[in-house]
Length: 241
Image 1: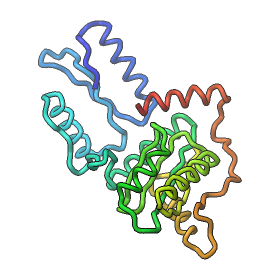
Image 2 (image 1 turned 90 degrees about the vertical axis):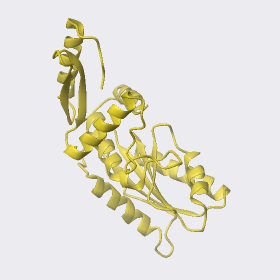
Image 3 (image 1 turned 135 degrees about the vertical axis):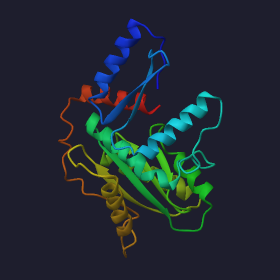
Image 4 (image 1 turned 90 degrees about the horizontal axis):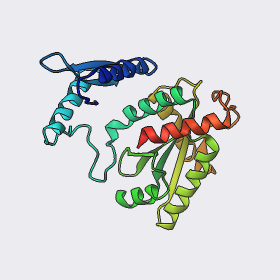
């Protein structure tokens, strides 16, 4: 939500913002004062349920009042990471961004194969992540690393870097890599199932510790030039911060 003093300029600003929002999978709600002057615009995901919106508004109101408005069911864990229940919501948001930016998104599903403290596994993985990446634990030994704007080749290199860092910390790992292009139209369940299938392949006799989807598919979903892709990735990084 953005608050601007009521004026002709602010009205034009919010009118333009509403128009721009029509290009994205969001809904907008105008917030007004008692005198009907415009206070702000609340944007929500088009698929958001009423209970989710109500909880978000409650947290927002709490933060504006200087209170802790966090929702225990959706808050990050003590390590600053999203909880396991948030994985599909995060994937939905990133898959929507694939459609908007035409840039791919990769996910590494990592499982530790030997006994190691979750905090130690997390530390080894985070060391290799970029600031736009998102790490979500699924349980004490399995983690999902979501890599926005990362194609399959780069995701494989990142997986190898993570595996080497984990080995240096005495942690054995197996990884399955899934990938979504703009023309895939995946749901969070689709991408997660793909990663789970690749992780399952690593457990077969003689399999490599890192398995991934076929690289034969061309990245023809990105119908933009190299320069345009760089600009789009700049937008992605700015939007993620």
